Image (tube, rainbow, N blue to C red; front, top):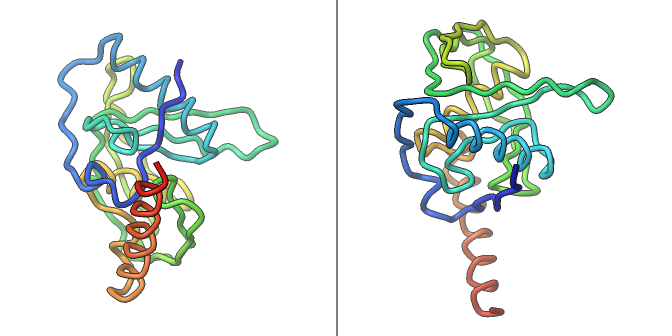
Length: 173
């Protein structure tokens, strides 16, 4: 396993659309392991492949609390089949937009279908934190960030902050 660098806004790869995975082979299994290690080290509860510069449709998640055993989920080529009409507002953050948290409104429940690492098709009802995490991570596969759900003013402030930080980092190196 390898801990990979996480891309940070405004990296343009975060806005790219990820490609479907045709076959689950050793390289995909290794990518999943690398993603899990990277997510745990960050620490986070979810990570999409584009966040580490891999434009492939794979996400990892683990919603286990600190005092619980790890419970990793790997979703290959995931797609949301159904969204509930009911919505919830929750505070979200993102490993690619560090140290910023905003309230986002999303559907409260989703049905997701994906392929697991053994090649089995899984259809799963997701509620609560899992539903939010699924939507957040699957958005990454389509180049969508949680800040896209904010007002234009808030989103522009976040973008300017990270663009300024990037300029300062380039000058320093």
